[in-house]
Image (tube, one colour):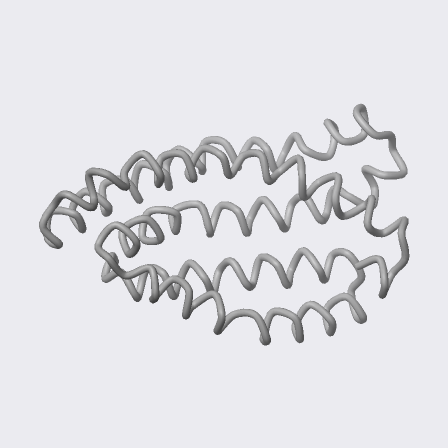
Length: 170
């Protein structure tokens, strides 16, 4: 972001990204907490548990993210001022939507690793690198920091889809 748009754009992007990123702690913690149970169950039982966990995360994150989308703009305005909020609020909205899409994917991520398939996760992440960098470059060039947020959200949406497909949860 800094090399394409300048240092000021980094601040406009990193403030909402770091703020919103803290919400990811919740689904990440649940995914890590499930790991021991997922690794000790049969594949069928593990998928059943994972499916219930995905539903729980989906509902929980909806209850957190929906009001966050409404409140992040006013919060940023009070916290960092109107100028930064004007640039950062659209970025926060897009990142929140990406986070909402990606949050349930912590479960298939944990399931794949717990069932002895960390290679699948690694292959998916390697597959995502080149398209993400290309998309990020194009989106930054055409849409600025909003484009960076869109590129990140597209990458995590792809990652979520791949993890659900690879784990067989659906």
